[in-house]
View 1 (cartoon, rainbow, N blue to C red):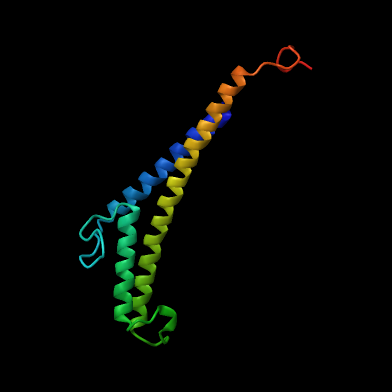
View 2: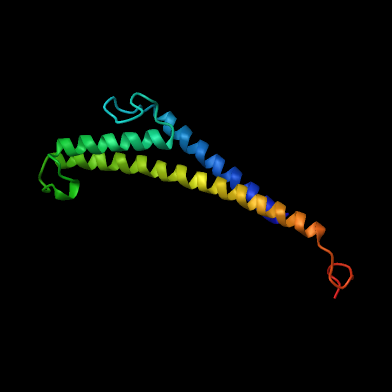
Length: 138
């Protein structure tokens, strides 16, 4: 019974995490840029839209820097701040993508653990002691 409860708790925690991250992203009222490869104009509130916008930010930052990353720009280069901001925004969006993945994994594992617990419970009900003695008697 403890395994089933642990599985249910994992499902609840995973779902709560998914909906919390989704809600927080939606509260920012960000939409995917019009020049995105996919989901252009959609509200960012899930892993796919967050990833799509992160890719657009990368494209814009590289265009602004002439194809150079933050580490490749000279310290006194004025474009460095723009690229740094883009990098921070991408990191934030990628963190939400990872959070969605962890939430989905926790939910999936929770279902699996609960099913294993239920299967063990069913098997335990059908087992009989080998010596004919009551269970737990030695």
